[in-house]
Image 1: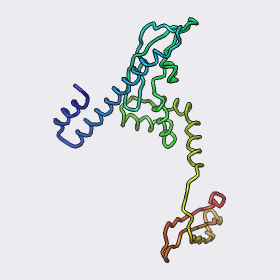
Image 2 (image 1 turned 180 degrees about the vertical axis):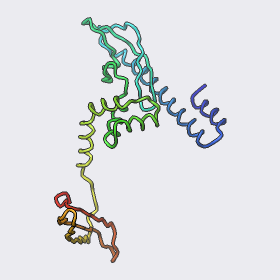
Image 3 (image 1 turned 45 degrees about the vertical axis):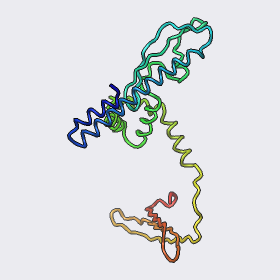
Image 4 (image 1 turned 120 degrees about the horizontal axis):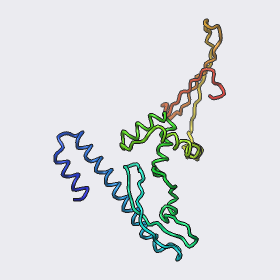
Length: 218
């Protein structure tokens, strides 16, 4: 029975939209696991003809990676090289670190989510969506390993040139006033700026900027 056939059969038993969504989601995740397994084992088979002549196959060994759609177990060839060393040629080609159980894409996703919330919340979010058993410690390791890479990527995206339309009529209005407070006694400078375009006597693309004691940032 194929996964799609199994999804159709389970959908026929669903009594609610909520249950139908669960059936489809679980089926799609399972389909992703099978496709990744076939991809890894097929790639290992094609790499066999590309290995150096002095590589000899010792056996096949299984490895499990947690991907965004769940755990994927695949078997790949274990080689003895001409120098007396041993290696998994597939792992080396894909730059998979030994004993690493999380896929590179999953690690990057964890690091990106952790930039916006706590590590515990990140683990809860991923487990809610993918039921992968991720812990806050796993998230912490991902952040330590890929946090700087994520930050650099975000900075590059922010610095990308964005092509904008140059407005024909741009208006900038502003005011500043002092607020005197009694407890504690101090003066606070408030700036309020409004920037907008005028088109046929209509205000469009209006943006308001309000800052309290943050003139430099404004």
